[in-house]
Length: 549
Image (cartoon, rainbow, N blue to C red):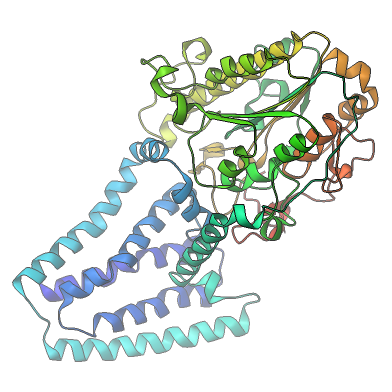
């Protein structure tokens, strides 16, 4: 049984390498190197001790990494485990994880079949104190040396013949382990954010009349893709309320510079974008601080849970921060259902009723985040059947119905916020909405699902952007409004433009904001090319990496 365990383990441990060599766009030599070099090294490690059961369990971290990698490949079809995937694990709450895992049972079952029997056999081997023979170890060590030598030669050849080849990027599991290091490094840097950002100042100057009453709502959506918005050309009535209004600006050419929440939201709420994220995000405060410097009362209301990221830190800059899932609990929601984004509205209404002269409200929604059918109530369930049982390609129609219902729910939230602002007497008011990123839902016959994949698709980055301005605002700041009407028709990088637009909307001048990125500026200039913040926090041209369009 010991020999069987030896070879079975050697086979299952190299499966991710075989898959990546086939699925990743690499030449034949790097592909062979990606299999033979790791195989040789693991082979040698297995020949160190005759106690194969103990050796298998000592390699459990690699088994865990392999299982994670196989699950990632089942979701996204390619790519090594990214830094952002590790950070997503650290910043995603347990409820989201359980929702996702419940719908991934088939691939989890496959992973269990691959690795659990090996671990069980290893335990039996340890308990029986079984050992491999010296002859067996000696023979296999010689084979391992040969494979390792061939693998080493292939790696060296890859460096010589393949432009930009790097073991840290192109050789599994070295690349995955390096990404673990980067994730840990970013986590440590993030944990010191309050210290590294404490001296940051916007030196914000209010330019609107001091006595003018103003109220602005900034809504950050979640996982909402523009392709499913009726007012942006979708052929289903997912915007039953907004589509009836004549005073809403809708941008059809808006793209996010990240497909992950923990990077996209901080870019939306600060002057940082993909071009300077890695250097600036750890020392930059959010636009909430700029509003406070300019004399605004500020409130942050979220339907998400704490996630130990910049989003939490930004919320703490506000005068009041409310996370309804964390702080209000069962006292707020009906016990028969989940929290919905519309549960934010009573708090918004209460804040506006205080009649502050200058008021900013930031809403962070749960939007269209999977599990879709838990994001809306019966009032917004326009598309049925929406009772899918698993996230799989064969149930796409039901998944789309449920997803479209989440857009209907978002439509209701935005419309109700507009109504609240519009009901304020003698108030210059405005609202800006965009989503952090989009989503893949088995589009065009593919097997791609969810977001945050190491390489993005068009569906993951094409996001809606909505603007609304009260008649008082249009009259008082007609130049800003006319510029917005014109610029909403252009190409927009939300990561670059959302913060400058919000600041100029509220009459806040600061040298930290690029006015050429503001949609309310006559000097607005779109980027020459869309860019994307890569997994290693490097800005890259989107056209060079995007998988679908």
